[in-house]
Length: 99
Image (cartoon, rainbow, N blue to C red; front, side):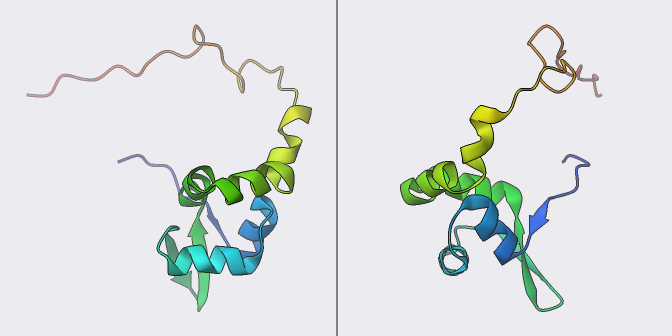
């Protein structure tokens, strides 16, 4: 298990980022396609499950790419090698031998 903290979004944030309506997000929650927790009576959606859902669903994928965050991908120009590593800069983690 990794030590990374899960990224969680509200229903309205997820709808805005993925270019869909809040109703679409709530329908995906109801259909158990997105994982979530309830914090103070509000859904907090797991970002990783939102990404998987948007990749699985053709309509969501198209809306993500045309109205959501995907419309900006072509404009991103990442030149810093620390954030856009080539395979030679990224070394696989070494596993320790356990007895």
